[in-house]
Length: 225
Image 1 (cartoon, helix red, strand yellow):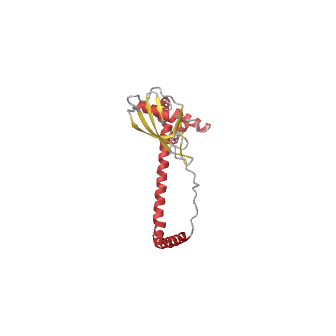
Image 2 (spheres, one colour):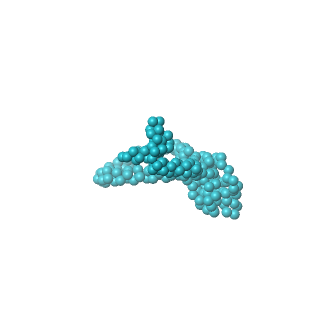
Image 3 (cartoon, rainbow, N blue to C red):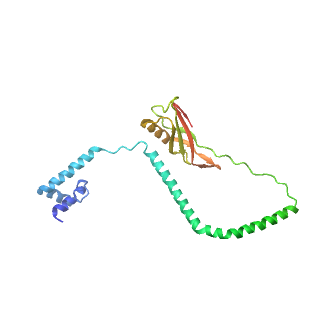
């Protein structure tokens, strides 16, 4: 590799100040003597100046909600893949064994059932008392509050916006679907921000928080969940 090639190969680090002091002096001295390398280095300086004028890229306002949606969808896909692999293993490993044992198992059930019927004929049945406690029915998510207030009303009395909102077990929205109503880009941004900063009581099943869905309607300033 020629001396010029070695110098040009280090232009990026030289601009960032990421070379030792003695090497910086060598590169500076070479640029003073070599017109070709000086022109090449000037192009690097101009590119760096143009990039610095662009400034940082603005993060989309709905990035957090989109990330939660993507993570949630990936989790659901992974669960389906695990279930599919388990189903294949079940069919290949256990199902043939169960089919071979089915005849013998059916015969055993028949014999046990016959014996139980004969015993029940001659034995006096005891009085049975129901002691089961009724289980609490499952509940849907409920909106607690939202720390975001849209600048413009969402929907109106003549054209309400109705959403199906998907809430995780921590009371946070991870997805939603518009069921009815006209939703433009500005309205969708307001909905994204509203749901992003909303907190729900999660759905419950058997007293445990689970994922669930709820329906929300927007008609002007009113929000019903």
